[in-house]
Image 1 (cartoon, rainbow, N blue to C red):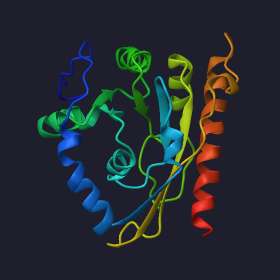
Image 2: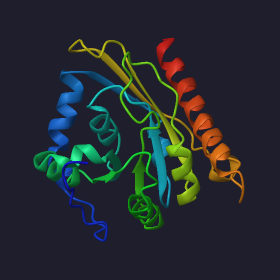
Image 3: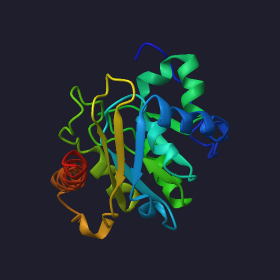
Image 4: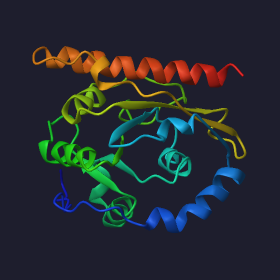
Length: 215
């Protein structure tokens, strides 16, 4: 890591930037893309939880944010925060950095505290955008985060007819929550269980995605 990233993990705050840009975001979702939302009632939950969407474009966090008035906190790769401008923008959109593949306990503990405080955490299970828009295999990180936070997970499918074409139809479909108690976590076998939980979450995302595609 060539640039030292400064982020205050001791500061738990819901920034208001998304509130300011929400009218523009809604207009973008109606004009540049034709975005439809389904299953938003599955976000009407008390307490903290995780939402897990597949990753299609750089606009996915915006699509998610426009689906509800709830505040979402996003886990973003550390490298994005090396750019001072992006650092400030992502931070004020309630994003925080994590070093991938390193067991970044500082970021993980921050996520656990967010859930404890009743916040909603957004994790993209694939870890990066899909090259062709179809859901890819989930990394174990979403399972690991579910284990560490004890949170239920709401799967989300983002289906886009043609991500390179203006005016393309986009369906953002929220599924029913997968209970943490149904993910098979025990005191042992953590690596296998994390992978199995991630696969379970991704299977449900794919099921929702296929439903959107078949219309």
